[in-house]
Image (cartoon, rainbow, N blue to C red; front, top):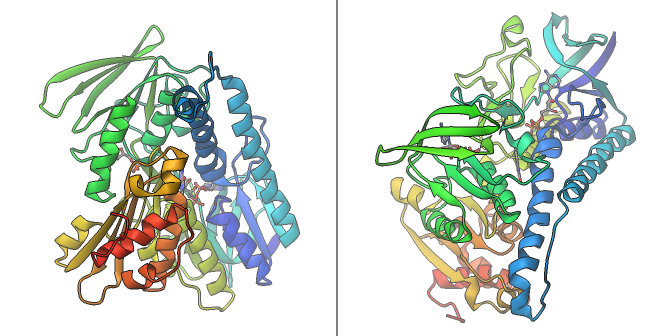
Length: 472
Ligand code: FAD
Ligand code: AMP
């Protein structure tokens, strides 16, 4: 039986980062993960690398390139006829990116001397200063500190259980070997909209059924409205306030019976159904009951601001705890926990976590939305600037959307930044930086921004807070 200072359970962006940082800080570290790829080999990186962030972005890029060549290039004077795509090649490219990165983690573990173990881990109990951790099919290990980073799994809709062929989760939706004729997606959240966009661009008719009456409620209302307009114009059929009653499979098709927002019974026939109705914390079989690990009603490990659980020296990070289910949040918590274990002052500020949707247009935000500020009675001012008035956006041929900055009326401190438009995913980072350093809108307004660049739209929005935007 091997003893370690730190044993991390789960090698997603929360777990593998926690393991590397622990090892960097001189702690003997093991990371246990059970994920295997289609070839039965261990595949580190968790949901994010295997079936989440990275493969979805690979397919979003490929499908967007196809759409651009087919529809947008003619405006540049470039014509291409009979444009085709090779789906098998597209999927192989995506798989290669995934396998390159998963083997990259193997190398990082080697370089940092992290012991990598394959198998399902279970907390067995306490033995002196150590926690005993069982590894299915392997030897038990002992750890002074345990970091639980077991992530999340797709939420199952009882009326539409996954069969992995016609009714699928994100994993299945990243691997269709043929473009569906009609794809129905239940859940118009980040995952549903990204995956729906991929297959629409590749030629599928895509219908999204969303239970809530509001579209992307986590985003700023103005951004959500603009997004709904843009996605609908592209051809995504989005039904809000939809209630899915039953799903039946008949002769290779999926029949979805649902009620629309007016309560009228409707029916859709699809060749594939993607269920993307959120994700649940993955604590099943972890031994929580055996060791008395406290979980909340959603099955998440209960933790404090420093990701400490109710048990001594047991931490939990990422999707398995409260907060947004995002890879960068998981990683940052992983770093914090490793530093705390090493006796340093770890810190992770959940009020400045950027949220991003990699649709076209891209959507990104950080801080408070206008509706949240109104609800909490905070007095704010707002500055907005459209990409349409920006030379770089016009040159790119992608000038829809805007940047909106919300700042405190009195102190001018930036409270929220909301972007819909080209490269919003990259532009948001300067807003994150501004919020992290408690910048005012004037701070941003007085910083030189390169010309011509998309970042000038952020600059102009900051100027607009003080009603002094130049180009509008
Ligand atoms: P995970 O990545 O889920 O990793 C958990 C790991 O633990 C897995 O490898 C699992 O096999 C292992 N494990 C679980 N239980 C055990 C056990 N008992 N023993 C051993 N191993 C175990 N986030 C973003 O920030 N940006 C994006 O663009 C983005 N896109 C996404 C797209 C899709 C389609 C999906 C599904 C998710 C996306 N996410 C995105 C969310 C992101 O993937 C998650 O927030 C992130 O992976 C969470 O990291 P984690 O380390 O907490 O858990
Ligand atoms: P996300 O949390 O971004 O993964 O998005 C999940 C989406 O699924 C949210 O917009 C939810 O409102 C939506 N959703 C959850 N349950 C259902 C349901 N039964 N039918 C349709 N949409 C749902």
